[in-house]
Length: 487
Image (cartoon, rainbow, N blue to C red):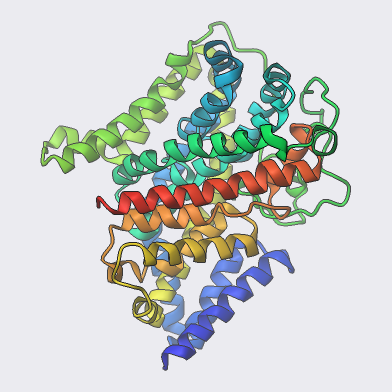
């Protein structure tokens, strides 16, 4: 089959996937598998070859990241049940004060808390952010909303164990330890620089208090039905969330904007004992240290059976999960821990299916010969390919409206191309993640949650969320290009 035919068929398959998700409201995981099946049949793989390739691709990615995603989701569910997020944000305010809180909160949300669902993390931290905003002066709402939008979206695609980050690493064959280390090198300066750029313009006329935000009121807790305060604007569309666990069929009542995958209403009861922040987050931080330490030891040429075993991501995250569960049982009781685990298992299933569907698409793309075709169009330099990777992911995000889905789909398309580029695959993963951040808009559930929970108008949310995260997308690409000079 001619190159132009393969390119055309693949383009039609991607457009069909977007149409299924947005217009027909077909679940994204089903849409990816349908697109993969159509691509396989149209490129001559045959019925048996297409189905075998889809199942093989699904199984391969589950082999790589299945347990990692499950452990991370369960850890986040237990941390949320302990009320760890509220306590952490309150402590940050005391330590860093009004001037430093946007940066401190941004770094914390983006780097430390990515085992927690994005929507859950947003709903738990937004009321505290809104109470902090008046202490930052006239532009407090804009500064806090921008910091939250940038950090939440960057974390899900650039920081381990964010579900999209883990999926990107698995699809592109990036060791999770390398993804953690180089992701940190990109995400930390990206969050700091992006917030600084946005703050600069916010305080110089970019933000109009009268038009861009609602009158400041004290943040309210979630209603009895679990909806966010104020709800979404009347007529707001139900679109894919940036958290794949929150992507639900339109018939599911939880798919309404502002509803969460499971009950995360703020709880005040902490049980008979009060755990410190270090104790709450210690096991999770230990997991990341073990993974990162193992990667650094490997780069230095040091190896031993004990360190190799403990630094294996599936073991390191299991240690973190067991430690977090132990702490939670002593603070909030066994019953609430079991409830959190049940909810975490339920929601991890949705993430795993979506990730596996991305792996199925990647396998069909590879089998169709698309990798060889695209490889011929990439420059041998380390800059142009990364720009193309970023552009593909950005275009998919603008079309699909979900950071996670666009990142996973882009990785599925690019996985067969990676070996031909002469680049470290971690750079491709970071560029795809950066591109998937570009222009978060009204098709994103995060957009409407930020609008309603932080008291912004739709116009204001375009500034803090759409433009703010787009700035972070470009900044992340810049730091990825700098990193490419050394890898």
